[in-house]
Structures are given as structure tokens and as C-alpha cells.
Image (cartoon, rainbow, N blue to C red):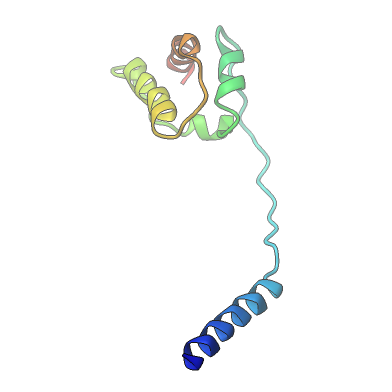
Length: 103
């Protein structure tokens, strides 16, 4: 019994020691270089997508005319259903149309 108490105390003390000496990590984000292309729906994209993504990140997504609208519809749906993006259903079409037209 005493052995278990001593182990518990040692574990607790070591956690406190590690926490006391943990230093915060600071880093500088790179400056954003891309900008959203002006167009219908840009406000929806800026208000909904930039909470998590930069224009740089959105511009790195695959391009191609064949499945463009389907691709962006699937991406926006994934952001809502998988990642919990708080995008109103009424805004989804405008966001998809903007992204399909500009990326």
C-alpha cells in the first residue's frame, strides 16, 4: 500500500516539475501573399472560409474544369459535416459558385 502511495506521489511530483519548466512555443506565420479574386460571393468566402483558411491555402487546391463545381461542393460539405464549419445552408451555393468560378 505504501509503495503505491509513493509511486503516485512521485508521478504527481514529476508532472508538476515538467509543467513548471515547459516553455511556450512562439513562431511567426508567413505573410499571406494571395488575395481573393473579386467576384460574386467573395464576402461569403471571406466570412466563412478565412476563419480557418488563408487565401494562399485555398489557391493550393486542385484545379481543373471537368469536376470543378463538384469538387468545391464536396469540399464545402466536408468542412461542414466533418470539421464542423458553421456555414449556413443558404450560403453553401454562393461559396461553391465563387470557388468554382475563381479557383
